[in-house]
Length: 224
Image (tube, rainbow, N blue to C red; front, side):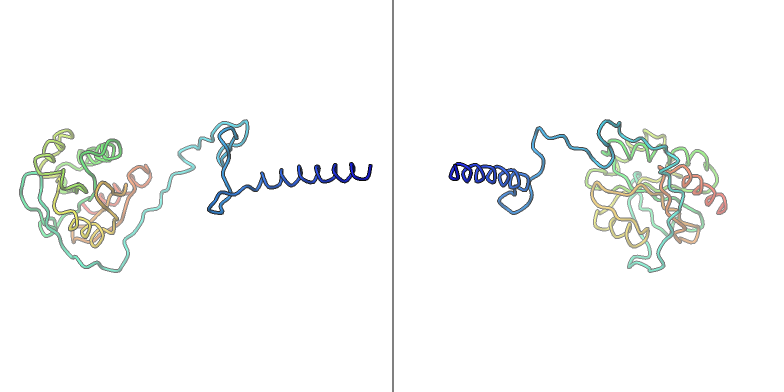
């Protein structure tokens, strides 16, 4: 009887230890393994039995406008090629405010929306001395000819709304040094950069944010 009792205790202990080790099973590299294919996982956003949380736009809007840092970059001016084939320099733009944006023609969603916002701004300020610059971050693809075809989709005025291209490394330097925006091939921010008539960056405006877009127009109105 004593032997049988000992065997039972050993078996029970084995079962308990097995469950413990199963719960803390680790992979060969020492990390705890994730849930199995049949396990139900809940994220921080959704609790069991709940639907995903949908926030009102007013809860996530950011009305704060970013301002430029006071540390100057290495570049103080730029020259790029416009869709017409002409060279456009920052010196050519002095004396009038302008809005800078970065995009690329093969962008499937964000860029068309961004340029639609620019089209609305261009129409509002037509004939008022405000220019708009769309600088490509995929210049190998976006040749002047490609930019001409793309600009035609938005009926962009050739004298008011400029589509610019050049060497990618140089464009990255322009974006970083002059406009304090991180860009790379096929990558850009969702910000419009407002530059005053003296060539100084006034602020950065997130175009998807209605309140910031409104503040951009207020700032332009004060400049013209």
